[in-house]
Length: 186
Image (cartoon, rainbow, N blue to C red; front, side, top):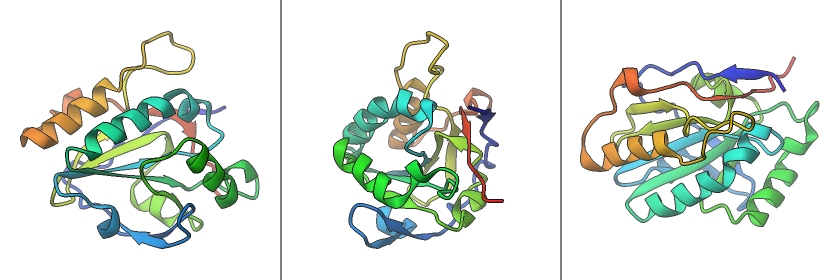
């Protein structure tokens, strides 16, 4: 497991567009399909990463809570499935159904979407306002699989609360996510 920090997409960046396969519905979805009234969370995850497995239940709880408040969520997996077949579309579909994902789980086969978002690790979180401008990028909270910190979702929750209140999360308060590096194709 190679621990990698997120690269922190510049604040104010427009959400890069995409049209990706939703592994559950078998439909292709775009950013406009997942955009919600108050804000939108784009997250890069995968099936096998211990960091993702560690935070996944908290992510699902946050999504279920904040979707009721007008925030959209989408998860994207961009890993090389030749070398990491457990991250392939069929396995993604199984995981999404078993965990009852309340959001689409999209497959980025070309890895172009991950590159457009400057995603570097899993999990990697991006929060966009109602105009799809980046207002937060970074970690869920300080917890990792081995550091003993409680899993609270504090950082992402604070960002989402700020979006709902129309306030900002100061750049110096945004910490990079830490996770497994995205498995780039050779």
